[in-house]
Image (cartoon, rainbow, N blue to C red; front, side):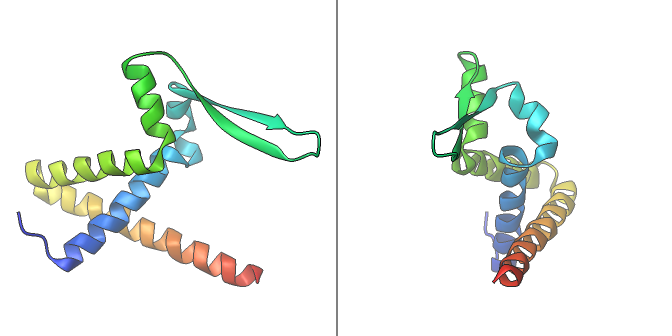
Length: 118
């Protein structure tokens, strides 16, 4: 399979957005809560630290670890989108485009917000 630069860039933005959706977005919190729990501890100086406790064993723990690691989830999201391109190219093309636009918009929003804070 040969991939051109535009496809690579679109796929990269799509994987970025899909991985963030699973690992960080509030809408996916109910799914993540099946596999891990977020604990927050407050130190004596008032600072807080949040960490993740993986639930269960076997496949449940594996999925919990996966959903707690942005890099790991990104690899599996990339594999899913590439497989989707092979199995159902037309539908995958639209899904990748949608996710890529959303990913690029998220990056632009973060950059603009940072600039406005300065």
